[in-house]
Image (tube, rainbow, N blue to C red; front, side, top):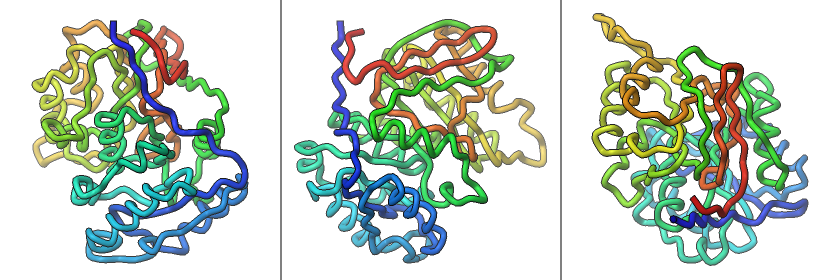
Length: 312
């Protein structure tokens, strides 16, 4: 028997102070206004970091600046949640310079996805602290906003119960399983294998999504997960969006979902495709480190959060 104990940060309440920072890619300051307005409307006091609106090559700021700002917010006991302005690329360049002693002593919410998967994986694998896989920055803008996805962030952060349901997909594998939810961006999960941020998938429900990859590279990353024994002992698999996928002049010949099916065909755990998760407007928040039940039947898929602590 394994006892899964992941710390859930204290739920937010009106008047709490939160911060926005960009530890990876850059954002345009004016494009963050709707995010700031939304968090303020929720009754939160919003601190906007100096990395928000800055540009330094591919990044928001030099590595040392991005790391220092994130470290400041990790250490500040008055900051109850850290919202990330954008993913892109860059967290892996600073992750090993960050200290998490104060964060572990006083856990807070980390809210983001994509490149932020590196941070999610680090705090879950090393410190068993849950975090929130959710949209960021420009996704709060009216032109790109999905109200239900934004509402899902509020619901989890403020302690409201949620059940995610979506329509059945022809490639689904029916069944039911319970376990800790883990995962995020497929490219990050593949790249982190063998590092201190590696994701332990045994008896867990794994969620994957990605954007802008060539099909052959998606196939290679899925093989990497399989060869590293990340797929053979899952409790369940949730597959979100693979958006803006590219192909070569000679087509790969399989869809992204067909590639997934190929890698898991000898296993029996339930699989739910087309989940509302990923680089798309419909990107519902998920508590990575929370204990969920995944139910897949002929009509729909359902992901229900149960508890932060549970024996399996």
